Length: 190
Image 1: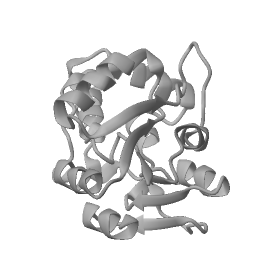
Image 2: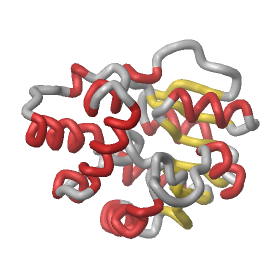
Image 3: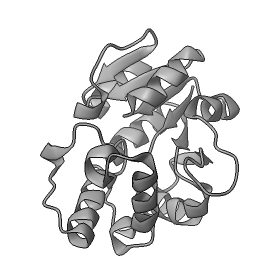
Image 4: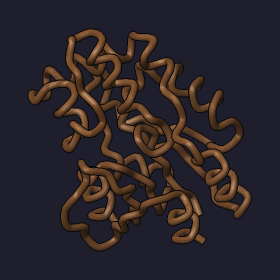
């Protein structure tokens, strides 16, 4: 089975780095406990402001210092050893493709066969939904943290394993199952 894996908050603790960046640059005192709507709570309520700040974040040492989420590497190794083909499905812009590939290679070597970029909010290039990326990749399952992307994928017939976070609460459509650990992911795809 080809499984799509999101990056941010699924295999990378990007939120902690964004909070640290925002607190340092903008003088805020945010913590993970403040975040119930993901980037809107951290970077500002307006989409334009969020986009500006996230691209600013990409240019900092905070971005390059994003850490992997504990326990993910062995779980991905198990999935790979079970014969699954793993691909990265990310909304990140193509403009940070080289940095993203380097981060994947450093923290998850030899686990992913390819990376698909959604190019979300990028000033140039075409934007693609995660559902479109999964279909292009041939991924029949997506491991995700964002309910919006999960709903889009489910509507296109893609099964989604949605990691439980404060920002993705609510009713889940068919094809979306909430997971609480990588053990849940392994169990559900095995």
